[in-house]
Image 1 (tube, rainbow, N blue to C red):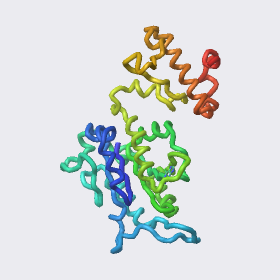
Image 2: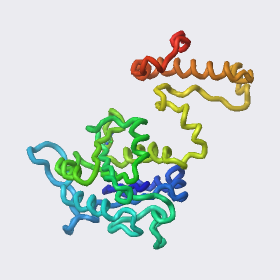
Image 3: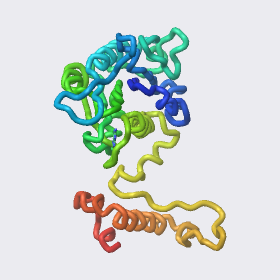
Image 4: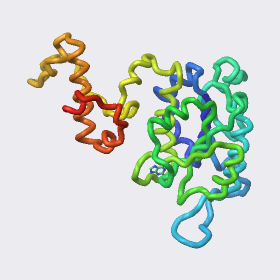
Length: 274
Ligand code: 6GU
């Protein structure tokens, strides 16, 4: 998979080099390019914003730098060198990562890249979205600041990209960078071959609509607090039942909306006794 992020604060994306996504890049499963939007400005002050038509507070991001940046990133992704970019990994040699790694571009796969525009006005980002995006070959993140990006960029990009406005929750961030980090981490861990133990993905919160059960490790008695007896019993059926009960109880307590949204078939008669 190829991921490009365009931002006026490219340093915000430095954590992508660490841990999860860093490992995926090192393994050749993921190829990431971080780009400074100001590299696509043409004036001396490298201006990216202007006052809003119709008046109001704050500034709006000008359309032309975005159009130039998106055009370059869509056309040049997968090559060893991207104009105006500083790739995080694997591009200092002159072999395109795509050749050896299988991180094929959208163009190679014959599909449009996905343009993700993080925005508090977007659709809520869910685990189902992460799954869907993990199956795509090229994601481009347009991280806006100020009051947002001129809407015509979003409309225009629809020709060359599958465009999605995405929100990560009901609160306001100063820009899309942190949201992009969240979405990239949720997606990258679902890339086939990325997680050491794919089994650990199966029972996770949000994969089946129930929150996870509580977990314990040694010692069995810690500062007078005991691990539940059933977990020490060796009775695998009883453990599985206890864990499912815990998931149901937790979900009912903290996310009753999730329980209410489950299809009828998701809960059996025994579940309904909890
Ligand atoms: Cl994706 N962006 C911004 N700026 N604020 C947000 C958000 C995104 N999701 C929730 N709040």
